[in-house]
Length: 345
Image 1: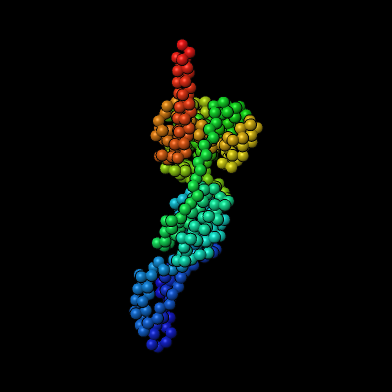
Image 2: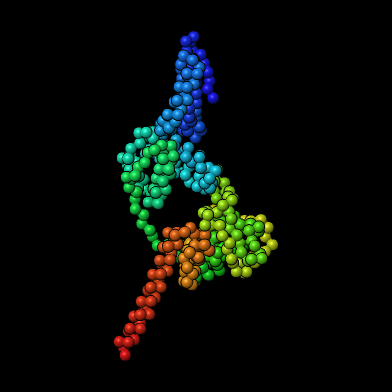
């Protein structure tokens, strides 16, 4: 709304809020401009003309840090609390190189030097996530694009996949809620957040399944929250489990495990170390689940649906390739044994 103020007998000045900026404290600050003309109508027309033709100008005068802060705030009601927390952490820790540069002054060389400096201490995956946040924020507030930026190449390491013997050994040392949690991951492919978010209302006793519809995540306030959506759209699923596992939850009211993902991870790590399984993590039990299904000949698209992986998941594809390589080696052994027996004769 315009604030009208007469300066003299021959002119009228109006003060108009033409936009907002994100301050360093994270709060929205109004951008105010003064327009002066002989009449009130002319002053208002000048203000309207400015807003129509310069609506992006003030945004371009934001710093990179302000743009990223504003971008994160704009997504608060869309992204999960854990994603918001991760993005705020990236903004706080990884934007010293370009954070105070104005969007209109940011150059390709500055962006590349910033990426190069991060490459000395961060993984390629971390850098890709940080750069993606910056790129999305800058394009959100301006038309700037940095298409020539070279990011470090990711080196994909083989995923650790527990064996059935290792899973049995682990279970032999587990009890109570931890035993149930391990079963949910190894035989149902539940993520830690999905398992911790389960309540008795999620069990369909008639069909013998657990319905995955939510997640437990750590938000920007460092508190654990139940979100009404799992990690991805593909994560919505019904998991069929043996009666021996489902039966452990009969009579339970409220949360099935009674712990958050951090507590689960710590308890799991303690038992795994005691068993000498130092490479095993709770999440690696999902890899075990997928490997066992692939070994039994289940198609990739079905494993995706059963385990809640997104379509063409790189993780699942790599696990599948690992199973195929293992089967290929077995085939070579059969072939060489057969041909060796022919030569012996």
